[in-house]
Length: 75
Image (tube, rainbow, N blue to C red):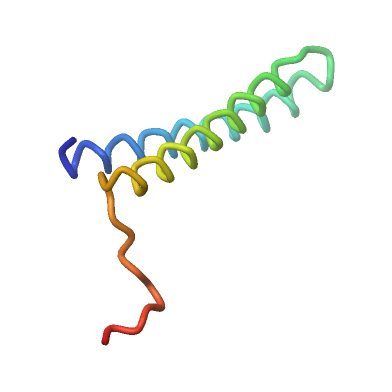
């Protein structure tokens, strides 16, 4: 997998997470508890967040991405 493709995938999922968070806020303010759109939007946000965390963990484990090591001793 290309480095820029991995970056675009992660950024795209982060944008989807933020979109669903904003949609949940919008539905909460507009619907005033009459529909389940808020719950559905926030459920999608949680699912996307968990999927992203699992993808990053898998990618590190498989060697597709490498952590840059903030806080490590350079020597």
